[in-house]
Image (tube, rainbow, N blue to C red):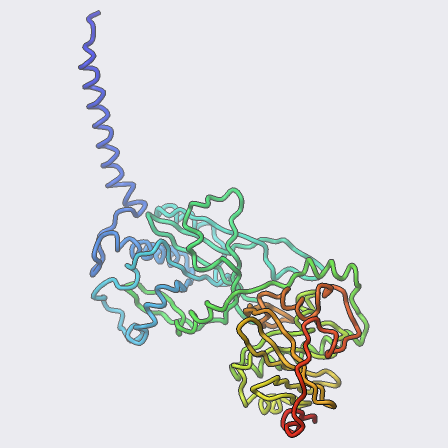
Length: 461
């Protein structure tokens, strides 16, 4: 057999490799890239093909969900921020062609939409269609907190987030659920161990670091960059809500452990008091919300939520906190109009203001006003018979939403520090004897009101 020239063999192998490489490039450019969205034609007004990738991915996503009759709406904060500046023009636009791609062509790794759970049945067909269109997708599930309670920690899991990825862009679809307090809630984005943490830049996502609570938004259909999409009617209000949306769940597991040590009071008096306290809290929330006054659960009411997910039956009152900067002169007449007469008014707006309203029977509503200093926050107390003043110091805190007695209300996000400041390290142990002047861990003597001011700062009815 004639000896084969090595140089010829090498040349043939090189030529074959080159042909194969050219075939791969051709196949990627004219088939795979178009299927997976890596190459897109330019959109009118965009500066480069790269700018239009986001627009094309969004267009394909909107086509996908439209084909399955899934009503989503845009909640992407960056886009809504741009849209809000031009909202009147966008609302009045007849929906004709846009002169350029202004909103959906801005550089971003992802775009965020929302889905109301009750408007969609979880159909497998959606994901099959998505795959045929070139999307990769990821579903994030976690337990449904709406099913948790003192009698059962269900552990039943529900879809919380979906990610649809095409080419270099991803769509983050946040699932919102309606809760018993007549508001919308979304869960956290927590990846299971087996999930690909490089699927998208999860840390950059705007929703999911914490659970969130929102009012039900009114939606409008608008045309943005030639794409029809639903958005919140008032984008600036939604963005403001988003910045203060963090939600804390009631700690049912810890509450159950508490009641194993200290059985709950199920007496008729306790049941009746809790019923009245719930009614009073709902009325107080309605009154303050109508005035636009932000408030939170304070003192014993906050302790009851945090420790046992319920009203403490021997507390005999409902306690709320309000920052003095949110005080309004309309508060007293508004509660009186709601059928809650003023029981006492201590202090003044500049110093140690405290209001108490009489609810049904012997149940009263106490509203404590909080003052902010450089290093701490405090509220005041006044002894009516002596004019003595007291001061209760708290570490600085922010406000989160929670659900309590079927009501969406605020609590301090740093709840444990707040409770410990007031009740000390033994806050888990029930105490039925409590002196507001000496029992709190954070109380300080704060002088005496001048006698000539008593008529103004000590008013008892």
